[in-house]
Length: 620
Image 1 (spheres, rainbow, N blue to C red):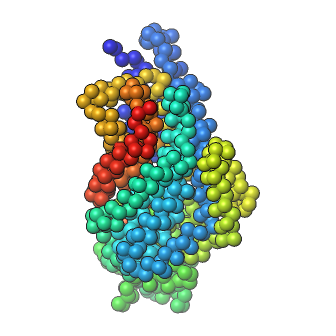
Image 2: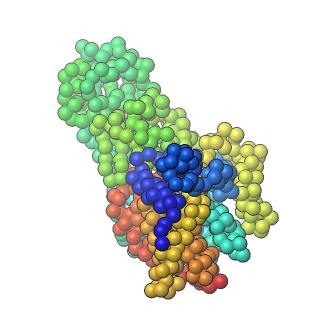
Image 3: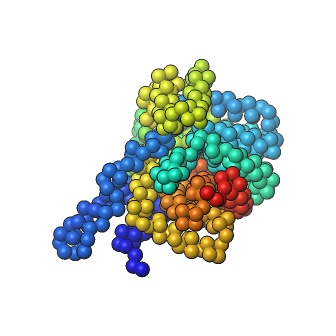
């Protein structure tokens, strides 16, 4: 039987999108927008080709209204509102206060630290979007490891994994659940089509969280490597001993009288003037406008070979027996000057370099080194394109670090002490989130309505200021959703989903329904580890629903298997945003995710398949 041109075209588009999502030559949200434009162009272009006699008949995958429906989709708007609600809670500082409490009770015991990390992030991820939960808790967990002399690598991967599992507790725990709910309500047979209920995920999600926690505290703890040794000093962690030193300006130096910003501008040297000590006072960025004087002492970042040339050409002397460590770089006034800063998903710096982004001038901060997974980069950093998850070792004044911490382009991996948290608003913010959940759970109003009302309430009650609402939203996720939702429509309307479902069901002659359900879990989980979790749901839910209909099975069970699988991308750093958050700060290698996450993924494949059958039932 010949395959319709629409189906072949959809398959071609799907393959191209998957390759782009996996290789990521451009950010995934840009790929999603390209997908949207492609789907919208198919109709007009095909009609033009028909008019020119080059095509037998027009091909239409989605109408204009269908193509743009992702922007007005209930799932997209609910996710947007949840980002605002999560930010309202974050601004109260309640999670940071919980972190301080945990630090006091764990007292440097790694087992207690690990248990507290998992026990905190799991439940929180069910209420305030798991991605936001990890972004909030990462600095707390890093500081917890620091204070307890524990390797942060031992805590950060479990933080990410526990947040993913915690996101399966409720409808609002992750954007994947919200999107799956919307797809099921539109694509399931009319007799059973509906949105998922708020706590429909909870029984199986709780089982997975318990099993996942036991794994992370036992087998997972043994498998998780300590890539970063417990440290006393960030300069030791980044192995900066051969790249940081102090020099003094000689009276005959040609640099005298020049501004710092111009002093080494025309030289070929890979060097940064990091810190100035003059008359026993310590100055950090911005140093650019200061004129260099004889006797000035600079902490400099450069390699040993360059240093030899620099001393000779620029009239500098080494400061005898000087050691530039964290204590020396923290000598300026203020609570903290040296921190790790992670490039966040959706950051405008992705693809930029430190030079093209004018990082030093824009943020009044100096990058001393950066880590990409387990790789340390300390030379010629200015022209290296930045990626999501890169961890920069940054020195700056307390004021500049405050600005970096408030900037959505970054996640500062240590707690910054001078936060202006709205502690008095804590009961209000928590109450708003609780009311949003309660109204949706009781069926008083749809989740999209209660979430948008809650977002507005955050502003009206002063938990958030109006400009902060826009900063709170991860716009890359919103555009990703808006771009991929029409693909699900195209798969369904073209018949591509039905064709794939028929192929899967053909295996039903060999496999019993339970194993077929497990196959959907495994395929979705593998797909999610390579491409976006939301894209996996959009691709797999239409096929799962079609397959269930052909088998005469419960479409809800098949949709749930796909939804749970899409939320558990344990085996790669690129499969889920939270994995990227911890990739740099934990110093992990790509293979660490397979090593620790592979067994967990296999356990979940079995438990989820059996659990879906038990809680939702395979039969109609």
